[in-house]
Amino acid sequence: MSPVVWGGLLGLGTAAGVALVVARILAIRRPDLEARVLPYVRDLATAQRPPLPLAPATTLVAVFGPALRRGAEVVERVVGGAPSVRRRLARAGLEVSVHEFRVQQVVWGLVGFGVAASYGLLRTWTRPGNPLPLLLVCVGAFAVGVLLRDNRLSAQVKARETAIVAEFPTVAELLALSVAAGEAPVAALDRVVRRSGGELSRELAEVLARIRTGEPVADAFDRLAATTGVAVVARFAHGVAVAVERGTPLADVLHAQAADVREAGRRALIEQASRKEIFMMIPVVFLILPVTVLFAFWPGFIGLSLSY
Image (cartoon, one colour):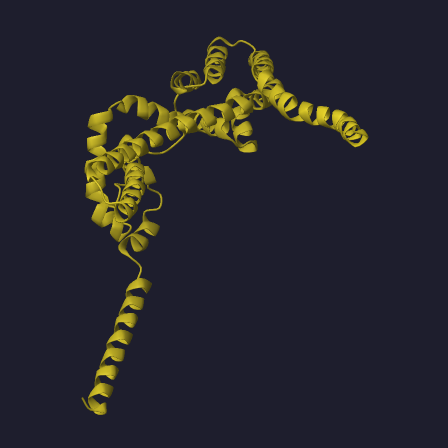
């Protein structure tokens, strides 16, 4: 092929590439329909607008999404317990549906399956043998991955509830101080939510949002008492609801509950220390004491050896 033909082909390819780049830049710069229309309907509530159809974020989602969803349905039929998962997701503060959680379990199971399959392939290359045990190991690794995601959810629930219990005395004292200063319960709740951060503050922010949408204060706190998995927060919410309904002094109730939680935490710490007492003695008995004895008797042993 002559240089003239090669030059023509290279020029044609370069022109086509430049044309594609320019067309893509023009398509990106042009605002979509939503960006052009929404400024004129900004007063409409976002929650009332119908959700737009979600396009696949990536090619992997487009290709493997249906298979993952079918796998999630299979896991749901095999494992079950959707109400328990839904409660734990709410208690963990995760904005994830049960189906999305099942998809995550399938992904974790596939990761375990892939690790086991990689190990099986490496072992097959070095020592060929019966593939049935390796297949069983891969299936077991998939099941372990699914169960590990469920265990991880339980750990997230426990960690969040521990953080809530740790934050509760401070939040209750702040609420008590605000109420004692003359603020209404809703105003005091708003002040505490704006001034604090944490898991309990997020729970109280949801309660405050329901109150502002027209739900009665007592009903909002009763719902918090019914949905939370922390007994301390349930007693707090029930106490606030009763105080608002009957007009009892709310500051005294909050001070008493904060003191009870601090005392319960102190007792739990003492009990944990008593249970760990044996483990605390292990380094003393097996590490420090032998070294001390060795330092005490080693010079005498050396002296006796030299005398003989």
